[in-house]
Length: 525
Ligand SMILES: [Fe+2]
Image 1: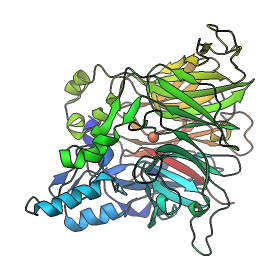
Image 2: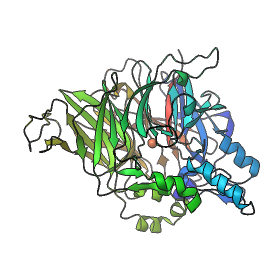
Image 3: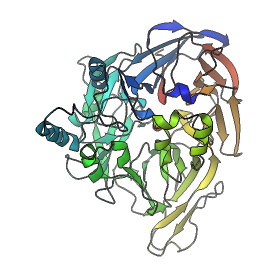
Image 4: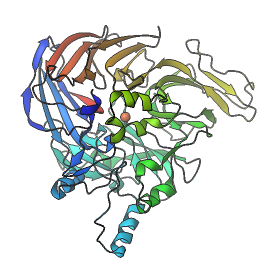
């Protein structure tokens, strides 16, 4: 089964190799898809406990004149260098806490504990590729990122957010507006002043390549949101953006700060310091991108766990946002290596209770005030069943419109980000975490179409618009596909986004690992 290849150590292909193309790749498709994900799960005799702990392995698919070249390199983070040098895992990850040699004396252990209270997190940035100005980074969700050269996949150097803006965490899913400015949200929870969520922006033209200065030095804080509960900030993995607003979901899936600060001493890992508070609600914050001011209406919904937003937009005095939610927090636990290693049948058995990812639409009416009629639905859009009901105390209770169930790692035509849109793409995730279909969902007809091939496991689908595209789905879907079948070599799949039919596949003559997220960087004309 494919679960066995999930935790297999990947290998580098530092020199580009040419793929064998079957079918026809459109000649307008020029650029590089750079992707990130865990690729090394053991060093020497030591192993990570969790799949999301694996050391970052970057890979890229370069499209040029109908041809595809592939390369891959481990991110040369400090974490990577220290682990390789020691020939064992010496840097803690979220699911794996590492302790110094037990023969060290008690004083050194206490001082090590103190330095672990404010976690100096790992720079193993394995989640995504993000852009600030003209700078590209491998990113996870901590204060360190590693700058990369997207053409060669070389690690260029490490940057600390804190040298430019005080934060402990920031998402690996920033948003970009049509001018190229980057928006992101971070969390300040320890050692850096008042705990809060901060929204920040890096201007498109902030890079200074000539003097090798990072774009991040021009970071602007747009606004901040206080934690609703001081010691329990929400975990968040992404957010929504409309033309005028940032949509932030303060979910009851929370970081326990006291547990986090004592984790090292208690012998627990940081991943165990996340807790889902089923008895709590979810709060929605809508913040003006220009003024940093939050809309004062208190919008809330039932408890949920969210990782990925799909898209958000404004229409007729409403903010509409789509996200993928769960009714429990089991997803992280499913990816412990000991769970992945189980036989497929027992894996299915032990994950039967897994709540499926549900693509949901929430709608927030912006023109509410204290005079709005209580107990009635204030959503006046006709194309959704989402509700927002004014309560006696003036807060607004939101109920979602469920668009689709069983899809994760969503992607859209990013030209339609922050705009009213019709299609999203993703892979089907049903009872097993090993998806093998890519789907396109039509929000208007509420129907979906799929691509699949037996024994093949596609990655997150990435949409690239064709030049001069008129319709939203004029373009291609790119996905890297692996198979446990030795007769099927890994390939880059190119689908017609309109029909989800295969246009081409580029077979890669070397091993390709299963990854998480990535970014398509168009070739400079
Ligand atoms: Fe993600």
